Length: 89
Image (tube, rainbow, N blue to C red; front, side, top):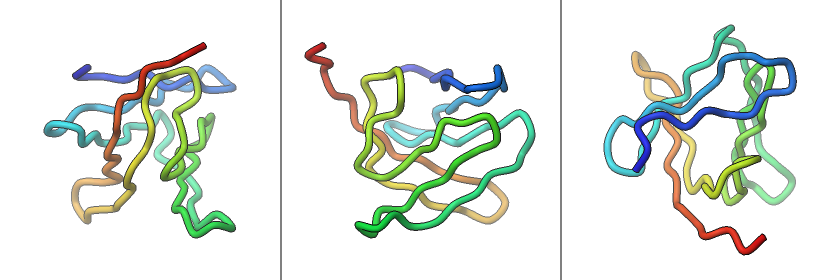
């Protein structure tokens, strides 16, 4: 597993996921600002400034990773659990 997964942003922000343990990564953002909520189907999402939006059961734009879980841990931050999928494109 990659230790760092660089996220594609729309404004060249330095947003990335840093491996904590196994398939669990911590979201690191350049600005520290993000919005979050629930999609119509009930999946949780977070959208850091500059992007990309990360949502449960959705592929991370430009990668072969699917977000399986998003949680917030006080004193740690947003933890993202990933599953690797093989791109067929």
